[in-house]
Image 1 (cartoon, rainbow, N blue to C red):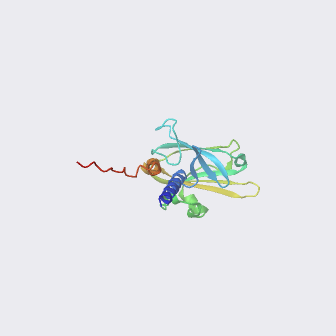
Image 2: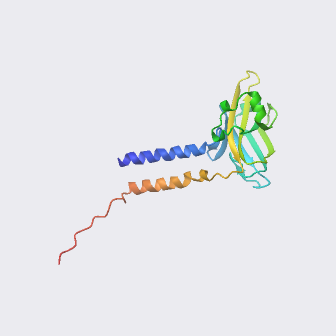
Image 3: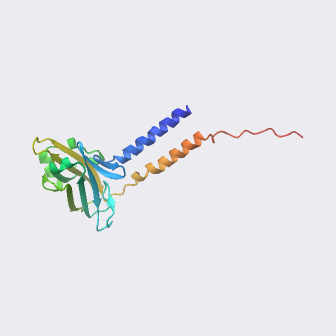
Length: 203
């Protein structure tokens, strides 16, 4: 019974860490790097707010309302030969963190929801940079697509993110992990057992 509880707790902790690592669609932490998945390809994702946070790099959410610079560096060389388009949409339908490409609708609807977009072209240097000033807090949806100019095959990545909204829940997994490890150590070292009380000598 005790070993079953230990295994259940360990599995829950691993699941919690995995969920926090990929919280917002196609963007998440991997080997301490912020990685954006575009179909079968990957790119390094970095965001900056030079007017508020100097050169501090962030992943996913944008902490302050205002100017933000988003930089996407291709990891696979194949992306340098694709026609890449990057846009940011208003989350007008309240999709939040669960937004998927299928939820965005057709091309016309995506166009109506688009707040800012970069031209679709081949970024041969392997870097896409978007500089935009956000004026309202809330949820937004990043959409990047990469099309093969020969076959026309399209790969997309959707990553919802928040602007100017503090997310205190992201700090929750770390203390839970420490609590869980402490509990495991407590059970495994046997400190839960009570110290036997010897009979006192009779007078």
